[in-house]
Image (cartoon, rainbow, N blue to C red; front, top):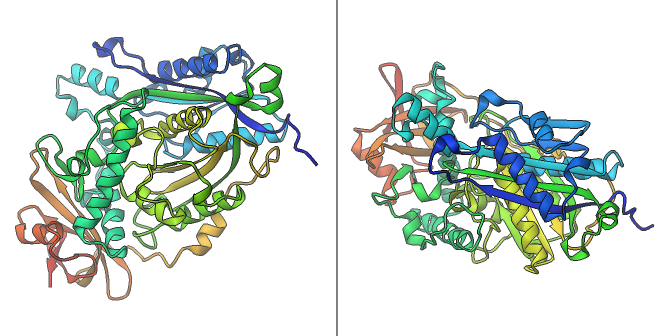
Length: 501
C-alpha cells in the first residue's frame, strides 16, 4: 500500500543568519536571530508558510538567558497562532535533530501539517555587551564558564573539569590509546578531519570562518593557535563566539505539492534514532567509545536500510575531534571524505545547541544542488552525552508516512558495561584510564587531571600540578602512551595528586 502523501514529512524551507554588528548594542539577540532565520526559511519555501505554522519548536539558548523561554516569543514574532509551542529541555547539540524527528512524527500521525524548528545564539554580542558593562576584556565574559560562577566548585570542578572543552579530551586520549595510535598519528587524524572541515566552510557562505587550514596549521600550537586542553588547540575546539541563527520548515508532501513547491526542492525526512549516556560524565563505563552513540548510529542506518557506502553526504557532530572520530569508526566513514556539509563547529560556527540546524539547512541545500541523494545527520550534546541521528533524502525513505519510535535507550543501556564507582577519598596505587592537561592563555600548562582506575576497578580523579614539569611532559610529549601506565594517588593538602610509578 502506497504511503499517504498527507503523512510523509518533508523539508521545504531552510534559513540561516550571521550577524556581525560593528556595535554590539545594535546586534540581534537570540530571539531576533531565530525569527530572522525562520523568515529566511519562509522565503526559501516560496513564502506564506509562517502564518500557518501549527508547531513552533525552539532550541534553548544561553546567550540571553534572562529572556527564556523564547518559544512563544518566536511564534509571536513570525505571526503564528501555533497550538504546539515549546523549546528543547536544554541547549544540547542533539536538540535540532530531536525537534526535527518530533515534527516528522507529528506530521506522520496527522496531528499537524506545518512545523517550524529554529534556534539561535548571539554569544558574541552577549559577551561584548557584558564586557562593556563590566569594563572587562571580552575573554573574561565567556557565557559557558559564567554559568558556573557563583556556585561552589564540586569534586569535578576542583580538578578542572568545568566546561565541555575540559572534558572531551578525556575521550580523545582514551580513544587514541584504544585505536593503537601514537600521539602523532592521533593528532594527524584530527588535523586531516579539521582541515577538510575548514575547506568545506570556506566554500559555505553561511559559515562563520572562511579560512582554509592545512592539517599542520590545525594541530600545531602557535601564538594564534594556543593549546587549550591537551591535545586540543584553539582550532580544534568549537567556536562559540558567534551570532548565528538557523531554522527550517517541515510539512507534508501533500501540503508541499498543494502550495506548488517544485519537486526538486522537496527533501524527505527519514527515520531517526536517539540514545544517551548518563548526565554525569564520570558515570561512564569507558571513555574510548560510547554505547549510546553506537546504538544511535547503527539503528539510524538500519531503519533507513542504508550503509555508509549508500550515503553521499554526512554531518558527524564536531564540537571536538573525538566525536567524529568515534562516529566514523561506528559507521565506517572514510577519513578522506568530508564529515560535514557546513564546516564543523570550529569553522562553520558553534552556536551551542543549534549547530545542527545549520547542518540541516546545508544538507537540504546540498541535496537540492545535486551533491547526492541521501545524507546522514548525527548530533551529539552535553559531555558526549546526548545522541540523535536522522537521514534526509531526495526520495522517500523506508517507513515514509509512518510515525517511528526513535528512542533506543533500553538497547544502549543493555550494551553498556559496568560503570565504575567514583571514589573521592582514595589514596594508593592506580592506573591511568585517561587524562588531560589545561593551559593558560600564554600557552603554559596550568595543571592536569588523571582519571585513574583503582585495583578494584573503581575510579578516582587526581591532579597533576602545573609545576610538576616531568609528569606534564610525560603526559604530553608522545614518547610513551600514558593511558594504561601505573602510578599512585597521594594526598597533598586538600587535593589528591598523581605520582608516576
